[in-house]
Image (cartoon, rainbow, N blue to C red):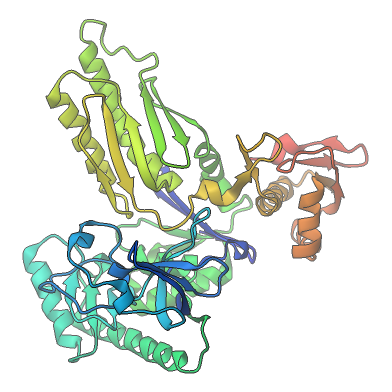
Length: 507
């Protein structure tokens, strides 16, 4: 975990490889999980949905299936926030116009960030996540995460949750990390979440819509709460305040994990030490090489993401059995596709064009391999059978813009065909590059040459940045704008001769 006052990054590594990256900045206006008192702007019976003003610019989308209606079912639960766009919509739902009207105020929670031209996705089924429990104050069911598989353990946890839940106090879901939790810990967390709901309920009565009511945890706090468990070998943090905050939280919920939390204090940055920055750069590339010599070609479009599998130079043990060669390449590609979807946080519809296989048995092997590796993904995914054309249609839950879309913007110079880094992203790249220059102890003075829009970003949005960097790096720094430079380009010029040393320190 790496954080500054301007941004926070979380990198998850498995088997020495980056598999997931998350980041947050103030300019991202992250609202996922936040609760708002909204005002209904419009009710559209034709699509059984409403648009709700929550005060963030774009009206949120609220479908009838996400209204707070009387529950159905037997309470075996295990779901998350909102009902999504799955099969549950096939059941009969009452007309939305019978339940909400234009101008009405309504308490809603964001389940999906605004993406492109679409506003945020909303639900009126409020849920408050803790480490071991999700509390649903307006529900009545008690459920257990589907990832906890043992029947006896599921029954035990459900009974524990039912015992701590007072009558007419809402519903609970025991989270995956709560598999070995004690009844005492469950009860303490329920009381904490229940008190939080009472504060929200009280605050709503004093507010005028549209207005924020409750903010979800920060990125790093949310990741510690939701993910950190004994399955992690280590958790490394590069700033003392964040480290202290994590230690305090872990002490209160799971002190056995304290020895796995480490404060990193090396001269090089944490992400450089573990090659995270290099892996992030690779995640933006169109072509992903496979160890066999084949490759994936990943092409995002407005409607879907296409992934093409190529054999490359791989020929297996010879040319006598091309079907086995193709199978091995497709199996490796299936594993890599699952990794890349998770790393790039690709969402929506995905189509994978595997190399054609004649054998149905081999097709089945490939789809089983793909589904097996998709099982590691926290996002909900669904992969259909391989078609006769070798295509696999998939869907992956999308709750926020991908890291690629968040870090880049459409390139105006090329008519929108490509993308360039935003000024905010360039400023952070410069900051990291200067830290590397300081660690080398070879630089006394540097001129930082940037596009005028990047310079304007520093002057208007972060006026104290250069002084902070001078103090931190002990390098004499000067910022210079150059209209001939690209928007996402910067150069470091060293010493009186202004020797270009950019490539020496940039990632």
